Length: 251
Image 1 (cartoon, rainbow, N blue to C red):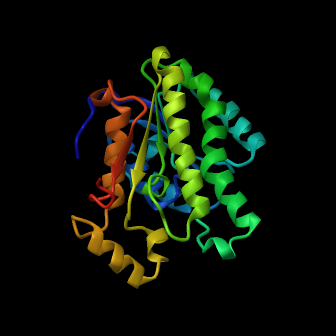
Image 2: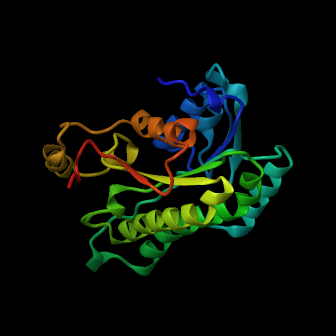
């Protein structure tokens, strides 16, 4: 693992922290000697276990919040402001899938995915922007998906949300780069996780045959890119979406 010495001691907030990618993000930022605020909606047990088992677990602070609810997000921001004076890194990682063909998709399935993936990213960024503005060289990393860049069968809701995250990233980056806040995104491809395990195996095999590396990615490969984007090593990277997909959607 690469060590970014400039990250040591920085305050990091990660949403969707109890998911597979979220847990990897927490682990890697802890290894960089960061103070990590891990936000989950319901199941925070994996995060509590990490607090106890990780050598740097005392630097992990677990918070509950439904990021689709503005009142809860505003309360989260108040709690955080009572604990720290500045937030250096925000990772908008929380996401939700409700996959089905468009002909079978109902309004609730579309609305829920948009609210979590897109509105949630807006809600958290908006509520925490004041704390980010107090930090020198703050960074926001939004977790999008290759579904936001190319067609993704059965995911009209997810594709729309993740494409929105990419557009949100670019424009927010343009607005705030001059004020020292860098905003970038990551678009993971097929990453080995509980979410991917729900996909029928024949579909996974078909996708794997199209991936030049001939394998799924792992969560640490996504987290490593987040570390880079939030570190001084990426100090001149602004408004970009880095694709982490083993070459699946190469042009």
